[in-house]
Image (cartoon, rainbow, N blue to C red; front, side, top):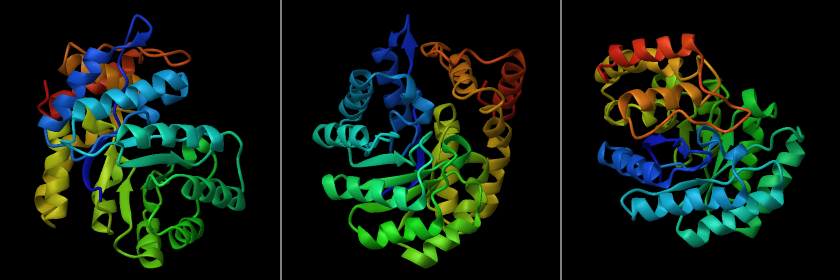
Length: 293
């Protein structure tokens, strides 16, 4: 259902409010440059600082602007199961094709709690679910056995995973435990090459915000098993992948977008602030290396 280069979109702000015109331009630019799907309201979209009304408006605008050209995977995750369901219900009504659901953060649920959380959502919404495992942020690690059990229980609901665990062996764990039909998307740009070689079929990407064309070409080369070309493009992008996290994300990403496109500014919501000078230097160098400025 999903593959290729899928940017986890930033949410532009202007004077403290959602900058809808800039976001619409970003959606168009992403689609025009080969992104195969879009993710609004993920971590890179600063969803944790959005009110529910803002969260829903960002998803609504993304779906409206994409106008069916690419599918939308709406960020619906929460550490509150009922709030996640609220986001899923809204996204389903708006026309999202799937929900991206992060493992609940802060609460630190057990594997049994994770099973109960995702099972409840799968039972109460018919919107397909892409699990999102990012233990570096959530502290909770969605173990392969839990992922396989969820896919076994809900084969038509739990359709894939964005894996940012950093453990490449999990690609094989999931493929052998569930099957090749299970959509495996890297959550780490710098690991996308070995992730795809192990059986992944794409990446939900931070870097694709800034370099959608190169990221799309990289994923096409991987899909064609042209790993010589994939390595060439990966070498161009590699410094940028790391520069995106030289300071708290999405600060470096928004700075990079401001350098590539003046119509997206650096403004973020507290407690996040604009990135530091070291991150700016790393981003500038990486943009030059990739031929983007």
